[in-house]
Length: 473
Image 1 (cartoon, one colour):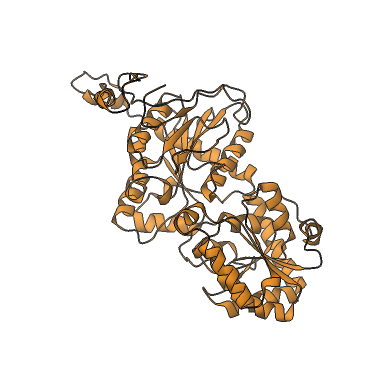
Image 2: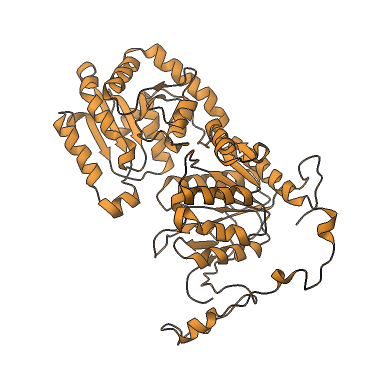
């Protein structure tokens, strides 16, 4: 614990920052966000270290880059405790956690709380979902998450309001930081269309991992009316099926969309690009769009990375009024239509295609606000939040500095662990003797790699650990 000046931020910025959440090459929005945030902060803080602690949802894990130093197994509770021990032993200044209920194990992602209870460094938690009416498990997790986080980050004013009203979160603890976006130039969509083979077309675009809550069928049902007035219109649905959807139901949703397009006789005006594209190619698809649409069905969606990307690139957006869209697209920065209303969707899209001046005005308004959302600016805001977190943790009362006897601090003694007995007597114990880094450090399988210096700053990073059921190899 560090002492600090109560009147302002600490003079020395955080030097070692750990980012915990999903991470690329895992295919999900949180993984993209965590990867982009780490990269942006590392660029703003080249003299420091940044490393990642991702959560694995599959047994074999992922082929992570070297910036990943420790891996958590989503459904293994002990893995979260071991990750906390790893972070505590890595001289970390602050841990940045990306929170979504579904990416952590246990009821409502409650396994994360085990990590937080044992973590001894400041935590800044970014909340990608803020539910106004949580169930009992979700409320319990959120209340403890709020208590144990030094700072809370939300991406919308609505998120801040819900935290304060539904969870009694202290207003002074909440930082509003927009979703980060790449910095791209404001160009005419025709500059990109030839590369994608859609020159001469009016391009409508939706991108992101495909699942039924995306509402793609709303646009497909709107398309006959759009094509009737603009036969050259083409709707591009860009993105692979979400891995969770793929595991549970396969390609049923995508196939149903293809059948709907044929039923509506617009199959010649729809392109399904079934791929998870890298940023460079994604930028070209967004650049080619005349109108971007998010027809999502869930009003309580507090943030959308795909909306942020398209909006920040200066696209004319037509969207359903889920919370992030309702806030971002107000004041003539976009167009909102009722949920599930294909006729309204067709009316607004054709209106924008018909009115070039209005469409360009919306584009310019969006692009102007989007400059505040580029990753370099967002990274600076996160660095300020990290410093506030360190300052909060640095406030130590004089009484807490008094030395204590062993009787007064029994919990600081090493914890008794008999896990080794299970390993020595279990079916896999015959060829391995358990080993601990210290008396109370649970066993972990470790993959130790050479120190990584690319994207991590000038200093060597800690060794990489993969935290699983077996002993420390």
